[in-house]
Length: 506
Image (cartoon, rainbow, N blue to C red; front, side):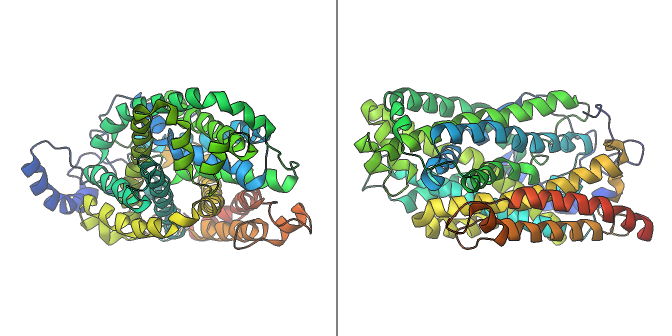
């Protein structure tokens, strides 16, 4: 890990009134009126303009752990775990092994990228400006990831809320409730997000403990699930699903701690973030795999009937039925718990939107989440009837782009900047003529993307490499898009970045 140094050598923002903050002062004009009316200063207008060292004052570093554990202790993680037995016919043992080991890698990458927030005071996609325009492509994919995640989260949250009182609360109503509450919290910004996430994980984790305890008497049926043989095709595709679930945080991990003090220890921040990501994802995904296998075994008829159409809400509702009214209360907690993931995601959307369309920096940040909600809400309402197909395809797709983005970004950081945060000149953050051209990053990403397409296995398309791995008779499996895309992009960037520096001098 790099030492807890701050980027002083090549330039820093000395004060909130220095030249790079002209844009910020203009952005804040409308927000100042709103803040004065609220009288509490909780509304955040600050966008992608880098924060000065003086503005990075948050010293409650442990809340980085509580933030990530709240974001990931969700029924969406539970749903991802059920895909092993449901979609790929994997046994509980094989599903659990993939979940336990693959999350080690996919959680470590965004945990390291989280260091860039307090070190540089910059948002993730602004830091990733391989070029002022070169970052537009990964930023677009990042925005699409946020919209997709929010839609998927809203669907599973709406399904679970509808299971509280079947026939009286529709899935559509549940989706709208999740979206509106998430919007309100993301509208307020960083401080409100961290206050909520600091405590929200407690009742949610308690609800999952109760679910495991009450459902535990039937989980032995998971061993009776007649799993299909674990082929290379099915294993590789489920690996891409699990990795895609958490590696997608690469595009926002630095956004959520930019206000933290610049001198926080690297190892400390990394392990707090990693633990907050890994523990809930691993444990809850394994729990989901166990519930899915038990339901598909047919030995617990009530679970099998509830899970017949692949909806998570009814399965959890039936499992908690022995608790009667208290079980319904736990269902409400689990359904509304998805807000702990949606709200930070919508918040991060506003940052990436300003990077993608720089003129949005002149609009107060808190207006942009309204646009994000207006986009993902109808997608969630339409996609509710095809949840598991949508979830499987979505997690695979975001795994492709996120792995390509992260390998290019980290290759630049470790190889060409020596792994030293002092080698980032913050004063150049919005100077196109000073930043790298970005040709090497774009070309490398395209090469990785081509390999990913040739190797992917999705509902709508199977690449020739995936078909070759899974065999001519298989209809699914063999997805190595993540692995080949990552390797191709990394190797290509190692070759093309020196050429770009030689030609353009930056």
